Length: 123
Image (tube, rainbow, N blue to C red; front, side):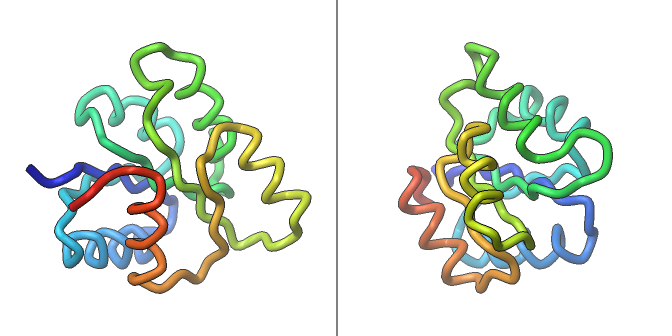
């Protein structure tokens, strides 16, 4: 059985790119266009991991991660955070919110797949 990944990003082009790249690697992919949608979708699809954009309007990535970590049924889901922000202090803050890894955009499909393999799910 293929691992299911929930990809969360407010940019539709990024959602399309990441979804395509992960499907090519053998993952089942679900998407959410923002933080609020992600919090609902995670309960519907029960993903094996979440790829989560940091900077989104409304509920941002770190807050989504904190909320997922606070609920017993979602606390153990690995979270890979993606950010266009590069300062190390910001990335450290994002990881403290609950991400297993924080990678800088743009990211290659191969780097994304490798990062997912390090935090758990196999396609």
